[in-house]
Image (cartoon, rainbow, N blue to C red):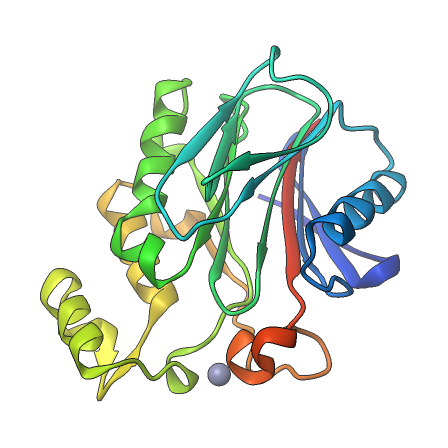
Length: 238
Ligand SMILES: [Zn+2]
């Protein structure tokens, strides 16, 4: 697979992946309010070099609900309630999530033409939201062995100390390897779940960037608290 990287205004780095998939990461200048989010998404239209029929996202709730978008899902910009994952097999529907430490995951099977965007914080990770997204994609014709996944910038293990109870719960469910002391490796738990579904190693891409460390580039809720902005991460079939 070839990765073509471009930088465009507003700090978006995006990649054209395989045949007809555009995936984006880290739109930094976003303050967290819904109205602001809508405005930034509208601005994104102009930068994409395409006009998505629908820009879809979730009113993220740290749950495991996945919204499946189809030709009848409408147009404009829509946020679905209590939704942390989005899947579609339709061209021209942009799926996006917002994060600031949680793991943003983009999934695609470009042979089947099925994509997904997933917001995996600790609650969604504990509820195996990425596995639900892969199951939903499979229902639309994707095959795990063909799925490629980008794990975007998130908080790294060294900077993610959690309560002893939470560390113990994750170690029990996902193995001792995901905790060190009381520090939780959130991306590693998601990758573990992805591998369990049969996605091959050569289909996994990680940004390697830590939101907490990259003060000039990325937002971090742990670092900046309530005032933290969010990164927008998106994917669209063209
Ligand atoms: Zn870090």
